[in-house]
Length: 136
Image (cartoon, rainbow, N blue to C red):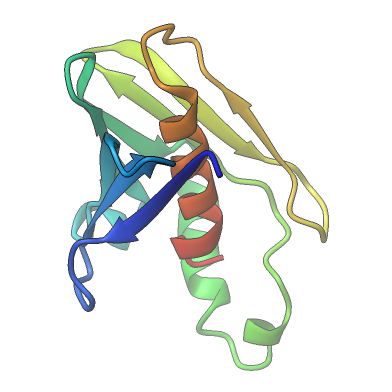
């Protein structure tokens, strides 16, 4: 096991998720910014000592809005939203990581981590959370 992540709260629209290594030691945390995510998915990622507070947003506002509308159209909620989405994480203008969902019916992602000081386990945990927690 490389890592685990779990929410601090059971029911919270902006819950913080703690990421721990296999020994239970903290790696970092992330949380969804509920208010900002109403129109464009927004997450905050931090790792003690290196990445204090990076912000990840959906790159394309149009795709973000269409994804939200898609879930409210009758019968379309049974059809996966296959159009790709992209999240770019930055800290004070410095690129931290990006997650790109590829076009297709199967979930495929490309994770780019230009920040050398970002723990790859934290980046992977955030990418998994985008897939699992982001309304698709």
